[in-house]
Length: 395
Image (tube, rainbow, N blue to C red; front, side, top):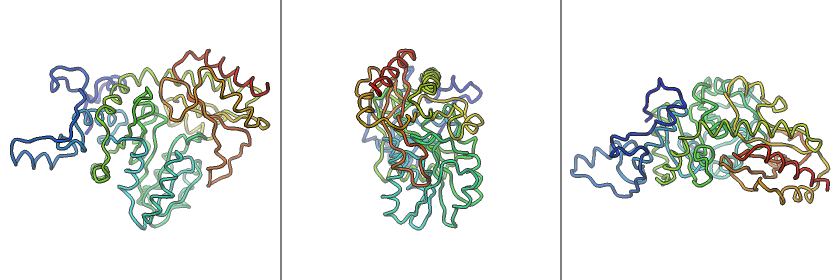
């Protein structure tokens, strides 16, 4: 459960939540507790620990004090009471879905979701007899037309992965709740810092803490956060039954990352915006898909609901650049590396093909899409690198 002085500014709580020096010999940061077996002095103590195994030490798979400290801090970050740490963002997505859906249920999933989410839904969930319908990210309140009597959950992500449409979370939440369905959201892009999901009707917030929370590209970690104790217990039981256990070392790295989140994200934001605005002026560029720019679908919703932007966005090049030209650009970047994931200190760029994966609508752009993560390097150096890369397209 989340603890801390709620009257303090959120940035202050990021540096203090999940800490208890008095219980750790005065040590400022929660130590890394490695454990499988936990021993107890009496039968009574053994049984009591088993009753509370999800919130105190009982067996390593259910968490150590390091795990609990990280969970408390993330719950506080997102404005919730409960959090579960899992070994990856994908594990968090899987637990959220499996814990709440059964054979015969129907789930609505945004077409803008992280691609492995859709793969999981179309393979594992389908195999378990759970029906899936994919919807347009900009559907808003019209999602009512897709609701079925057996719709158990609506799964959303904002902004969309790769294409960055910003869904109207509040409108979708109202429809889902009116139909008795849950709303789950992948909130990784905002890191829980620039969007508070529970203020907009979300029931379950999911993050790949691998990204901005860890912040250093050196750990795999996921979180599932909620306010409803029943949902927490269901997810906790599911995670335990599946054998999911976040490593204490990775929880420690997640805690370390949280302490600097409030200073890192504004830098990612400012650099990302500078790059996006510069790219929008380039002749090679068709459109920049950054939620803070009015060229991005859902920009007005972003202005209404979000308090900032992270460093991840996409750019669509104009038609006419073949794959040889794209490789010539990307293979010779100096600062931008090519690699999956994002949220770390380094800038990244990868080619993407949204048209091949979108099922609920036709992707309107014909040119090559590039996904960009703005890291913590000097933004002018990053612009020089992009300029040289774009010049290579026509060389």
